Length: 157
Image (cartoon, rainbow, N blue to C red; front, side, top):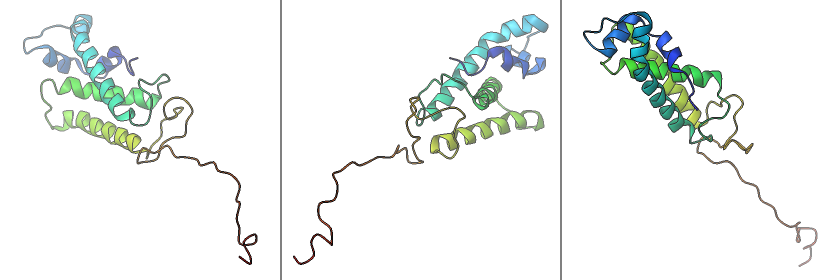
């Protein structure tokens, strides 16, 4: 299950950037440009979703069956970065935003993996189990028989 759609990712990218992704001599416009860029966008989304699953797999069963809106947003941001990095990211003001959004997405996913942030509507393992702590421990419980000896019962021995 994809966390975002290639069409949504293409909506986030200006036509001149799409042309540069396709090739230096690209003269396509409108729907033809989107159609030519669609395979690249789909690969970028697939790669972004794999990256997200890599972080989430430590705490959740992936792929997520119910996708929180935040994961959809992160998937789009990472996919846009993946597309832009095909030709190299210039850290000028225009592309700095793409890099900043990617770094913010990775920071968020790192915090999810550490247990600092929890995803809405998700439980560990997807089965309703307790969420693991930051070290990945889901906790434990001990059952034992009642106490046999106490200070009172052992008095005088």
